[in-house]
Image (tube, rainbow, N blue to C red):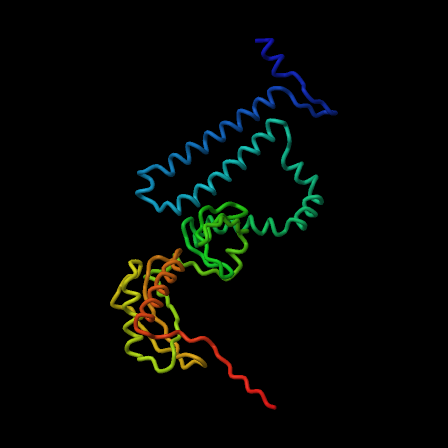
Length: 275
């Protein structure tokens, strides 16, 4: 026992009154791995099948992030204590330095605060489809500083959290009911309006992603410079990949217009030359 005690009290590093002993390093390692194990247990408990049957997985994901950060804060405090480091004195002594760092990392701190707001407030959750600055993104992970999303082009995007909390963001997943979309098309003057209405409606009906088929509504929008303009409105639950759906419908509309000898004009300009 004396040998073990002597080994644990062996000084690895010594400066003035401060020293690092073997038992401090062992304690820090044990705390680290115990923390990892506790987080694993918490995750297993929170994401168990029975738990997911009772709660929304999106809410559980945000709650787990908060719990994980709290556990790590406690763990880091214990590790400092194992090395006999007084966190209060350390913070007080480095107050001026922290102020300078804080000013330089103001945006980073802003992201951290925004991350906490997102995780606690729950206005944005994992799986939500957001439109940020014209880009539609499906949120896959919400972190403390950044969130990870997937664009419609299957590109992974890292988003600073302040963009979600401070910018104007459309959350398509908050739609209580189905979402309505529209497709616009212009045809040549002289085309039969009733035929155009039928083509637009039939073309939309051919797509399997369209729901509430009785609500499909063609509209005569405007008299354009080179065309008479129409739009067709329809409902779909396929929010995230709606551009693919709209592309398929446009393709069908184009084919059906061609079958009925209806042309889509392009802008033309007459130029007069004077001698």
